[in-house]
Image 1 (tube, rainbow, N blue to C red):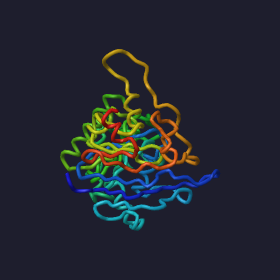
Image 2 (cartoon, rainbow, N blue to C red; image 1 turned 60 degrees about the vertical axis):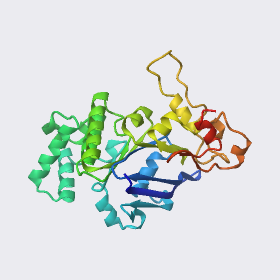
Image 3 (cartoon, rainbow, N blue to C red; image 1 turned 30 degrees about the horizontal axis):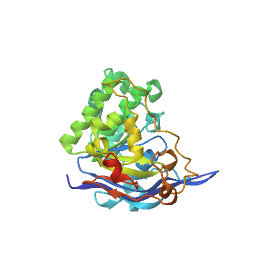
Image 4 (cartoon, helix red, strand yellow; image 1 turned 180 degrees about the horizontal axis):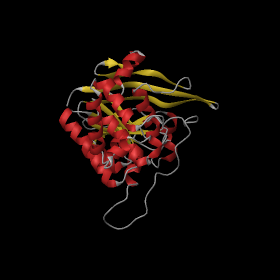
Length: 328
């Protein structure tokens, strides 16, 4: 896999509030290759979801804005496209599974009508064929009483059912890229497994790429080829699945992995990352993680760490990255 389907360069997103302007995403760069599943992981508020919304140019204006950066999709910079051109890409070539299903489903129209109209618009199929395709996808995401749910309004359904319908609507067009923002948080484990199997099939059959946004390291281990770790608006580590889980080289990544419950061995208390995420309106000087880091020293307070290349594509933004990778 050497074809870069998506390439983000120096993306910075800012928001204006009554208290001041802050950077929700700060100079972020990463890429996805064709057919690759990349996990974007980090605590709530670190900039994961804002990064995803920026890719589709869905940052709410005028309070938010993409201050700088480039977003290349199939070689085209999405930030240079017209609203009409972006509308053709959204949903068809790039599909997003939102964290809150009601933010993507219209409360005024029945589920069936929303799915059918989308299919007619993007696939140019007849209404009868669109209904058949839509109902088939509802079955694929584990909905048994298809006819009832097809005729229902979103508010008549549970949160988990809304989530499954939104997943069906996101996968139905065989998109080149799926952005999945905590796609299975409202679902039980059986349906979660079913959804992830569907995503794997799409990757295998049509080389769909997936940007999987989550705070669940177990899901990352199960699904991803590569992992990007974000903290306080910045990427702090990036590498293969083995790099991140076997040789974590940033103290924050190590803290995330240490907080995962162990299924075997002696029972221990869960180890949370100490401290709390700083306010985006008042990030510390130097390394943003320094106030929570047990390895912090004077340089961390004065300088912002740059990425250190480790092995292969593994890199981390930490002055001690090489020592931490070696377990020192």
